[in-house]
Structure formats: C-alpha cells, structure tokens
Length: 160
Image 1 (cartoon, rainbow, N blue to C red):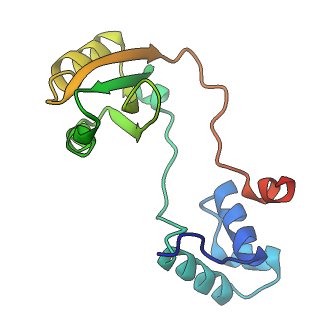
Image 2 (cartoon, rainbow, N blue to C red):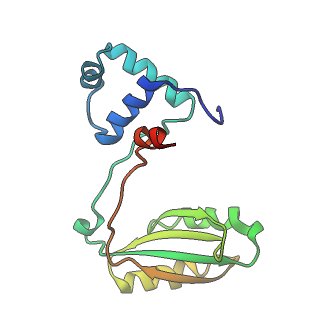
Image 3 (cartoon, helix red, strand yellow):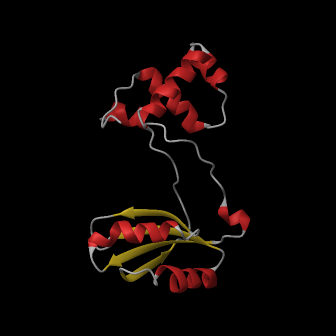
C-alpha cells in the first residue's frame, strides 16, 4: 500500500460522488463525469488495491433503534504498551463503535452507543472497566451531534 498514493482529478471526482451517495450506480457516475462505466469500475478497483477505498458502510440512526445514549470515553491505561491488548478487548464489546489511540490525557478515546444510562453504566462497569490494563475511565455523554460528515477533500485540496 502506498503511503501517499497518486490519484488524479477523475479519481477524486468518483470518490466525491460516492461519498455523497454510496448507493449511486457506477453507470450514473460515469454519465455525470462523461466516461464509460468500465472506467469507473477500473478506477474503483485501483483505489481499493491502493488502500484508498476500504469498503463501504451504512449509516444508521441508532436513536431510531432505541439506542438513545452516545458517550465518549477517555481511557487511562496502566502503560501505553498495553494499547494493542486493550484494543482487542474493546473490539469484542458491541457497544464500542469507535476507538482511537491518542495523545494527551487519555491513551484511548472511544465512542460507545447504549440504549439508556443504565445500559451505559453496565457496559462501563461490567465490560470496559474490567479489561486488564485499564487504570480508569472518564465518561462524556453527548447531548447532541451537530456535525457528522466526511472530509470534503475536493474543497480542502483547493484551499491548501
């Protein structure tokens, strides 16, 4: 995998269209960009092989499924060398939807989604805080998510 892969403007346009709507057919993208649908397929395959495109995902409104609490968790480790081991334990907890190795106060900053505050308490007490290597945690409950978007790299490239 290339550290800074070389992609051209067409590759970026294809990515921008798919980021905007991941369900849009390649044939529609091809028409919009005035190329063949085969070109879109080849370019996407190339970007998958380069590690730029890592798959696809589905955005779900957890609130509508009864998961009303999103919390961020700052995790202090006994030693930062325990990160890989602790991360493997966190991967096994379904409520942990994101975890990042960070600088600053916490070794790990995670996002967890729970049905209610009682569910959150159980996840923290019965699952997360029992992981060997976790010294302590600090929890921040999200009251509202104002921004959730991918990076608009087309505009970011122009302003750089």
